Each structure stands twice: as C-alpha cells, then as structure tokens.
View 1: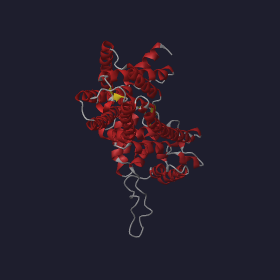
View 2: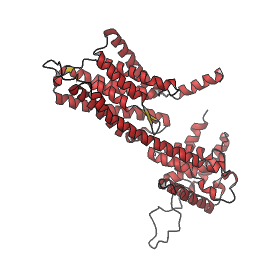
View 3: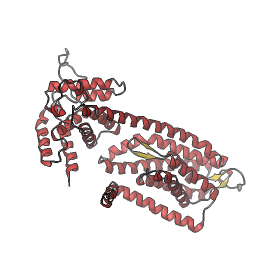
View 4: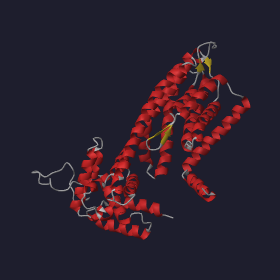
Length: 448
C-alpha cells in the first residue's frame, strides 16, 4: 500500500468521527488527564483494592462485545468500574466504631476511580489492538464518562456520614441517572452518525440498551454493597450474574448476525444465476434502510426492511426466461406480482421470516389503488383488489425502481431524471413521501 493510500485511509477513518464524538472523546480525555495527574501527585489510596477493581475492569474490557446496530458494550468492565465508584467500605474487620455500615471506609477519591477505570480499560484493550480490533474511541469515552459522573456524584456523599438507607437511595438514583445519561449520549451520537431524528435514535437506544444497562447497574450496586459487607471475595460471587447475562446477549447478537449473513448469501443467488445485475440487492437494501431512517422507522422495522430488500427479487428464480437486466420495473404489473408472490413463498419456507415474506409479497402492489389488508366490501366484493403495501413495501418498491433504472451509474442527471419519472408516477404507483425521502438520500450521496 502506497503512502498516498495510507493517508487517504487515515483521513477516511478520521472523517467517520463526527463533532459529537469528538466532544465526548475530548471531555473523557480531559477527565483522564486530570485524574492521572492527581493520582500521580498524591499516590494511590488503598492500592490493593484499586488493583483488584482495575483487574476486573481490564478483564471486562477484554471480553467486550458488539451488539446489534454495531453497539460496542463491555458490561463486566462497566459494572466493575461503577461498583468501584459506589464502594463504601471494605469488609467488616478493623473498622472504627462510627464508620458507615461498620466497615473500613473506602477512601479513594472520584479522580482515582477515573484513573483506575482508564488504566484498566487501556490494559484490557491492548490484546484487541494487537490483533487489529481496536476499540471504538467514542464507545470507550462514553463508558468512561458515565463512570466519571457516578464517581463525581456519589463519592462526595460519603463525607456526609449518611445513614445506610440514604446511601442506598443515593446509589439507586445516581445509577439510574447514569443509565439515562449513557442512553442520551449514545442516541445523540447515533442520530448524527446514521442521519436520523434524535427521538427515533433515543427510542432505538432505549430498546437496545436498557435491559443490559439495568443488569449492569444492578450488578454494580451488588458489587459495591457486597464488597462492603463481605469483603473482597464478594467481587467474584457477584460478577457471575453479569457474566451470564453477557453470554446470553452475545448469543442473541450472534444469532442476529448469522441471520443477516444468511439472508445476504441467499440474496446473491439471483445475481450468481444472472437474473439481476451484480450488487442490485445490496444497493436496494442500502437505499431502503436509508429511506426508512428518513421516514422514522424503528430499528427493528429497519432490520425487517433490510431482510426484505435483500430478498425482494428471489422470486425471479422461478422465471423460465429472465427479465433483461433483472429490471422488474419494466415487467407488467401482473408479472411483478407473480414474482413477488413466488419470492414470498420461498421466504416463508424458512419458518421464521413471515413478516419479511409479507413485505416482499406486497412490495409489488401499487400505492393508491390498493385496499387495507383487513378491509373488504360487505359481500367480499373487494377481495380481488390489490392489497395496499405497508410502508416497508412502499420503500422497497421505490428503491427497486430507482436502482433498476439507474444501477451503478454515477450520472447525476440520470438519477434526477429517474426521480422525476417516479414523481410523475406518484399519482397511483409510488408513495410520494417515499419518493421524496429517496431524493434526499440520493442528494446526500451524490453531493460533492
């Protein structure tokens, strides 16, 4: 690889970090610099405990995982770091009479929590970096920022000698606030990264992360309370639940990734057989997902939309004579519906993608001349009228027509002419709202 190519790749990687991510990374970096400087100046307080929690954080970072939606998470590391931030004391032996909960007080400062967390995360990331799987800077910064907030909010409360029940209440409130902060920051970054509205991104983040966030927070509180009451051995006991939870989430993420890989492989059958142009299904899926985001679809709906878009042409395998170029937009309406019906039957054979099959089946139907799926005349006289497609089907219809007529051509004038043609057919065939969403997507992609 030439030096010019290397510099181009570095610039491309840098440009994937948006302004929100840069602000988050800079803030987390500032916290780390201040924390490490302070710890270096005053020394490590209770170093044995700091090392134990640092090792737990490093191991958690080593076993981090990537969840659906390309969300990088390290629940064990996060639980260990928040547990260290919430730690009130260590074991019941040797405590002064007035110590909270009758234990040796944990005397480390909020900045020491930040420093230990940062060092543990760095050490745990080194093996990943060594094999070329560098962690995402924004994900690490967000985890560190959340832990910093918990430490800065909770540790000063220990100087007030509050009763145990008030400390537990404070723990709960601060942990809930930290979860909410993490979700909001993730939603802000995701909204800018995938070009969707903040409300939609927030809804998706809540659905994707709140269960794991609740498990992580509960484990962190258990670690803090049990270590205070039982000593250091409690760390091992109360880390097991989050380990089991992480294993379950990793299995779920693996199943979803396998599904998508299988669907992508299946979608290429039409390309290998020469029924459609190479890359057609992937381009239609990319357009469809981008349009779905423009129109406010939730993440679960986007996944079904991507599956359906990838497999929308699989019914062409039943054709004796392939359509020239695989452009179903040039086929008769009856032929389009037959191809969609056959494709839907193939997809239904999987036994798990019935909703995707329905989207594919209805994606060939016109926008305005159809009837709702559950509506018929008093004598069933509307039963022969086409069923109006759902939003996902209308999106695929527009995306497929555009790619059938434009293909891989980079000609902006050709793309503009096709969009105008789709607009002229919006009276009945194509949803005008979807066509305008495609126009915005195309404009972003072709903008210099």
